[in-house]
Amino acid sequence: MRIKALASVALSLGLLLLSSVALAQYPDESPGLGNTDTWVMNVHQTLDANVVATYVDQNGYASSYLAATIGPNWNYKFPASSSGVDSGWLGSVAIDSLRPIAAIAETIFTDVPTGDHWGASAFNDTAEGAQEIFFPSAVKTGCWRSLLTIQCVDTEDCEVFMTYRDTEGNLVSGSPFLDTIQSFSQETYDLWDATVNPNIPNATQMPSGWWGSLQVTSTQSIAGVARSHCCLGYSLAYNAVPATTATEIFFPAFNRRNWADWGGQSDWSSISVYDLNDSTITIYLNFYDGDGNRVLRFSDDIPARGSHSYNAKTTPEWPFDELPNPFIGSAVVTSTHPIVGCGSIVRVPSGRAAGGHYGFSEGYQKLVFPVAYRVKEGDAWRQWAGVSVQNVDPNNEITIHVQWMDSDGDVLLGFTDDVPPYASGGYNTRYSGGAYEALGDNWKGTVVVTTTSSAGIAGLILNQTVMPTYRYIAQYNGIPVE
Image (tube, rainbow, N blue to C red; front, side):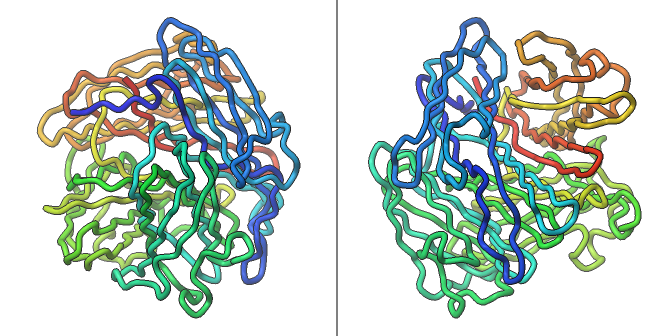
């Protein structure tokens, strides 16, 4: 198995920063104002990391620099409020260090017109791009809008070719759409608003009610993030997925809890799968409980270059009515041909919040999470984290080691757990028992998960925030490091 390091000698790339940007209008309303903070973790075990964050505008020019020295296993936040860029700035963040680092971006939205007027999304920064990336799910409806960000992660400007297809693989007229992105900069494509960037399908080529996918190619290295906003007030994001030969996708968290009860706590997950092939393929969707029991399996045929979604709430009763209620587990999607995918979770009535992530194509022996929370004010919970770690070995139970560190790299809590094949272990700083009191009531630290299994692990984190007048969640993938 190949272990990927986020940064070996040089560079971690942040994809997006919105500093008080009013996003373009829905057909009838705006999704709000966004500010992105970047959390960086030094994953070296013994040496400090000197880190420089460069804020690059859409013309490829550096607008601002921030620097910090981050100790071994420390985390550090570069907040949007300290970036030095003007209100209304849109661009990317390049994070340089001679030490291995891991980083995530966390965007908080205010002035959201519905719900409690707050929202959030998170995504991984990346140290390496690809020449072909995929967004398995993109939306343009009266209630949903996708904003697709592509970053040039190359020392040369990137000419990109964007091919949109509907869920059945049919080309959107005008594809491919072309654009040139400056070195280390980004361009964002709002499917509802050509004033953000005109290189998108028009209303005739892509009318309201469209669901589909985006394939992006370049002769240079590129990366991407999809961010989708719902008219109900929540948002989610996920990283674009590079082309792969993998025939499995691992989803460490899949929930279906009280899904029909909007009056009580309700969670549901969704999976989107993209067929990377030029022919129709059959996929098999498998769902496992925490003990590794497969409780549901069904198949579907996806047309060439099509993308199908499976929503535990809105998909017709069968097959998801065969899941127990509540179901909190994991999923594995398999095929005999290459596939990629992404997933999401919607949680109500918790501020009508949502989170997104990409599906893992392989497992890793070490995952890090650059920020997790356990914050209380008196008896009131303000922030907490839920970590899901999946065993991607189909045959063998594995042992994982989980460490919870403070921002100075000190281990406050550590334990091992045995995880059955394809199952996920769940670890929640609020609900998983008294051991997490060792973290204290104002913890904003890191999580490191390791295994000696050659098959490795996949993992997600969901950070939830609950304040007196608003609440949101932000989900991101565990970052593989050496």
